[in-house]
Amino acid sequence: MTVWNKLVTALRGAAHEAGEAVTDSQALRILDQEIRDADNDLNSSKEALAEIMAKQKLSAGKLQTTQAKIAEYEGYALKALETQDEALALEVAGKVALLETQRDEEEAQLGAFTQSVEQLRTAIQTAQSNIKRLKQQADTVKATESVQRAQATVAGRYTGSQSRVQTALDSLERIKQKQAERGARMESAAELAQSSSEDALDAKLRAAGITATAGNAQSVLERLKAQRAGSKEG
Image (cartoon, helix red, strand yellow):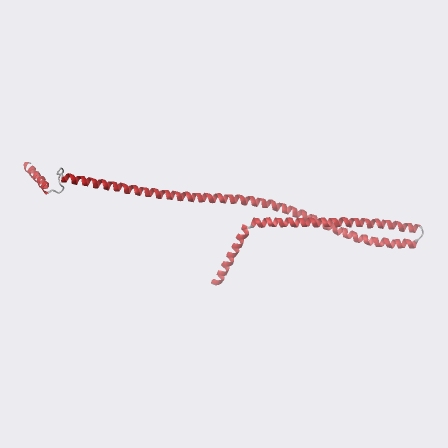
């Protein structure tokens, strides 16, 4: 695979990951919209069912009327036969035959409406169960999402507070170190000042002849004579 192909593949992978991240961030919103769409479809199905049931009712009424007419004209045909008016009876029988054809068509139509009603009712019941289950699962997912967000917030705040505490402790240690260094410098300055003061006082005493002058040749000679005299006596 060439470098260019690898680059294209990497870019496609990054785009896919970005798309998934957007989808995940909008997952609950998408889920809510899908549930609303399912509810709308269910309501449309219920309206369609009501319309088909109305047509079924009208079809059943029409079939009942046709059946009543068939019974009525069959009665007329029987009466015509009773009066020996076979021509009239035949004409009435033709009417009955037309009504029976109409009845058969209406029965078929009513059967189709009845089948549609049953199928649509079953579909609606299934959809209602699925939507109810989906809503319950959505509520569970939302509750879990809320809990996890709260936990993440608490964890983030705890981590942040720990970081801030550590930063404060570091700052405190730096302040203590600076104070210790400042105290050491002040003690050193005081010792130097005291030493300088003692040196000045010794100089004044020597100048006044109260104390011996450091490094005086006469005093060194007198000390050596005393040591020599002492060694002879011994």
